[in-house]
Image (cartoon, rainbow, N blue to C red; front, side):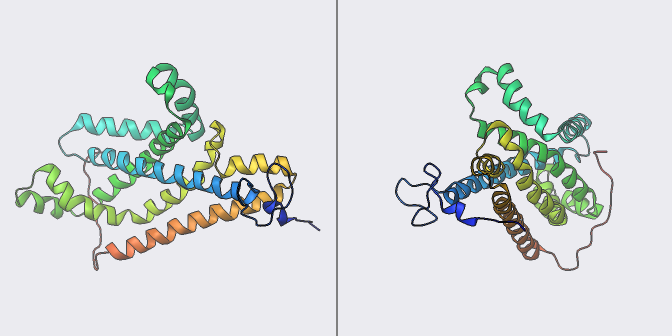
Length: 253
């Protein structure tokens, strides 16, 4: 039978002695303090990378559906194939080791920024593909309606196409938002002090890997469930009653 000792989270990380409170006081830092700090890093990396992914993915997803811009469509297709076909860990090492060597100004970039860029661009390829599918699922009549009103291409994308396309892709976008929290675990490879790094280090220091990994797993699950509930709330608030998408074909591949 497993003999688990949860009191380790109330111990000082230096002296290994139990503290008066599990969150410590003054200069005392417990393993629970450290755990919450690591969780903060995980959330910070994930949310910042998600913002990068949404911005880049939206731009690439739109240009892949432009009706009269074949070169932009090819660029968008190349972007998606490049970033989604290279393993995430390899991309992180490329941004951490190779890019700073080729681009001197990047040598001063903190690892946090490099990990966020790598994770964000990796996810942007998936979001771009989902947005392309969402745009092409809209009835052609919506595009023609915008043109009949005299909208320019940027205007009918902004006011007609994208608001409906984003509604369509909320379910897969929810999955990507949850995945980005899980994928952030690879940040430990470049010494970002997030949850996986915490689990590896504290599990080795305390010889209590079971308790540590259970605690880390619970925080990953809480993070993913929180994202799921937030996205479900957004989906409910922006739903258009009676709207049913139908496939079309324009741009992309």
